[in-house]
Image (cartoon, rainbow, N blue to C red; front, top):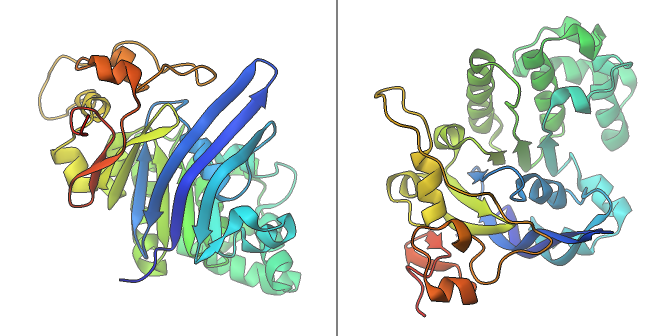
Length: 320
């Protein structure tokens, strides 16, 4: 079996603030295989986006990676100097950031922004870079004349396609899509999802798809990691997660998905996620869990394999 494209081991990312240390990602481990899509799901504030930024070594201050390894194609990038990491970003690992409007410079034409990536990494002339940029705009369903436009002249869906083209233009091994359909209407959302699925097959890339929307993950992911309060609480094949969810948190998330086929009373998970400056002892989900036991309040459950490739961190399944 070939080595994974990405292997993350015990990753910890903390924000050191004047009000305390926020343990945004706290001991996360997973891997992504060749041409595999890993979906990362969870409520807002669970650490999903911080994890995505950490994989590119782009955690903003006052945050930093305090422990763990990020092994990309056999190289631990946590130990590399910043100038080496700059060479890897976009060429081996890239990101479709949340909210294209926040990514694109409003006073620079789209073509110049895409060309800059190629000129920096490949040493191309501006004309050569713009020619390749036009090809990638076509790949994501946009006309070449978009190169001459400013971001404000594009719709939300068009801007998101531009950002996707930028993420793909150096043919990276792994693309991280951080909530790529946020603030888009459902029609454009469907278009972007179909585009990502097509690009995965055409470009033969691996992908991490980050979202709070489990219905989107069900559509695109081969494997799912469910995060809660900075930790992965369940990890496994997509079919297993949706057909046989084991962690009470995963079960609650799936029950809260509205159904178009039948009218039913919407359910939700009572309570709110914990303050990550001072998370509860034991299992971090126990204050909201309907199955909480004494051991849940005392000891943190290990992530154990309950069936082939399906892992869960819950005392309902772990040996006490």
